[in-house]
Image: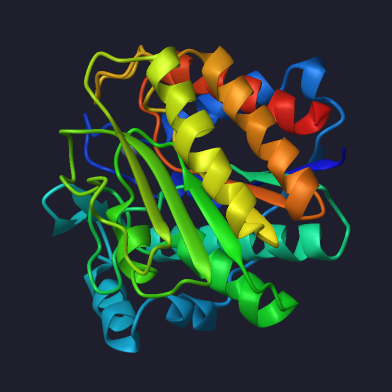
Length: 308
Ligand SMILES: [Zn+2]
């Protein structure tokens, strides 16, 4: 397996207010753990500049301009109750999109079997016309449509194991059966969506997890609901919305996963990517707010991507 890692210093320059959980130190913790010689074989690349026009794959122009106008010249501006922007946030968000699209290019053009994108801000809460939940643009949704438009992918699956429901991704693909959206998430929890009954055009699979559950319930959701749906759908590409805030140490939720669960889930998706998608798997960092839990989980996830 060739596993590529995209990062970029600009991702550290999206500054959030003091005490905000979505902070640059998250990426520093990931960088530190991936410095270990166990990851020497990672194909490390700087995220390329993003193409702003691809934002329109998931968001209308009017919304894009609204976000652009919200970027401050100095200091930190509030975009929604818990979403903020600093002077470099636009460049960070667009570079995150550039990295995700480049990762799609890499797996379709054979430069890598799979790719992990360590970027911020995250994306899965961003709806068509709403920036929220620390997210400005929906990077995973843009990358899915990029694969369809630039690489003739017919079916793309997005598997989202962030502990929060990816309301934005669900919103964008609600009536688009060419993209399958599968999510495990704590419920009740922010943002409040993600009930089993929310099925879109039959392309949305929500597997809510009750607070204080852990490995068994998470793995059962994969085995009984998500993996069989993936097999039926037979995607040309699998994108993971890889949040690690279902880790038991995470301060924002009450699901008790360990890094072993992320290793296991990664292995399951690698197997499906091998079966249906020519190994093509792109993983995008979403949440994960305990630095140790995040670092250990990313190490397990990327280690599994490399092993296949
Ligand atoms: Zn989250």
